[in-house]
Amino acid sequence: MFERRHTRQITVGKVPVGGGAPISVQSMTTTKTADVEGTLQQIYALAAAGCDVVRCTCNEQEAAEGLAQIVPRSPIPIIADIHHQYRMALAAMEAGVHGLRLNPGNIRKPEHIKAVATEARDRNIPIRIGVNGGSLDPSLYEKHGGLTAQAMVESALQEMNYFREVDFNLMKISVKASSVPLMVEAYRLLADTVDVPLHLGVTEAGPPPAGLVKSTAGIATLLLEGIGDTIRYSLTADPVEEARAGRQLLEALGLRERKNVDLIACPSCGRAEIDVIDVANRAQEAFADQKLPLQIAVMGCVVNGPGEAREADLGIAAGNKRGHLFVKGRNVAVVPENEMVDALVEWAEYINEHGVEAAIARVDTTLAEREAARDRSQLLSEKGDDANHAGEKIVEIRKTVGN
Ligand code: SF4
Image (cartoon, rainbow, N blue to C red; front, side, top):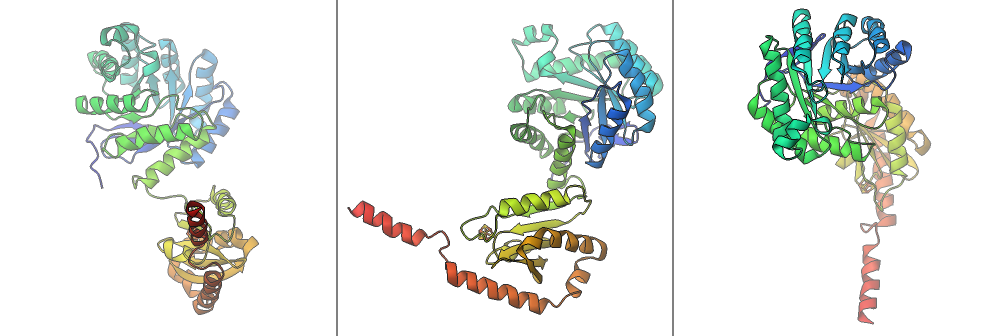
């Protein structure tokens, strides 16, 4: 599809990053890290939602002590987020974390940076240089006349140079900004300058849906150019939503194998025989925690639905107060309207276990096809081809204009 940029590879715990490894999904806990049970609960929920690596803040001694208990019980690698105190980075490594994130704008003394990198080198722990547009070293703002892509990249390169002075190379970099065009420009510039893995994100993207739109705009643009090795959606929301969004983006772009249901649904129109939004939402909820790698369609009418969604593994289309189930475009069953979602779940589980062919073979498709044809022709004769009554409207418009 599109060529990935070649980078060196590092590993965070057991998760490889860069060097052609699958793009990983990251998120960050919102609990106090000292709250061991609460944090672990969130980490397990994140892992179930598709998160590969999780970050926890390490801002005080209690947090570092919490990490010492969280790391051995976590199902996924833990990265400690460090801002102002380099000693917290040393404490987090002592706690056994799999990686660190340092903000070069907040820890600026070269001797502190090098002390952390030296310890990380000896322990074989990777570090992300996490440049953030909002907390850039003031001297770089001044030098570049404000926040620019060049200023952010220079911040990352300065940090890299300190790392190299102590022979530390296990790094990845992020240059996040809340402005999508700015972060895209910064990552492009960085990708042309270094060969280390890149962690993508739009910082402070805000609550959904705007936060989702901004993050997707920035992250997807770069991924489609082959840039990016690990991603994080920074949403003002339950972090599980971040992990889901990251996973869904990678699956939609074909960059990660599908693990979850890809629910497609028609946008509804004047032909719709059901409340498509309601049925699609209920189906989305029913499939949310199911690991079924299937494309499932919810279509508003049997007139166009099965044809338009014929590529889906499974679908349902409404007609005459009934739901017409179809598998790969073949009608297989008719169910009452209020059982549509339950029927989808039952058929999806069957297909997942036995495959599409077996699902089609278990029923008499002629019967289902005949019923669908009957409802289709009844709907066509009732509503005609002009479901939105455009013809009548045109007559009215002509009368109005004619007057
Ligand atoms: S499937 Fe039917 S209801 Fe849905 S958009 Fe198409 S014509 Fe309209």
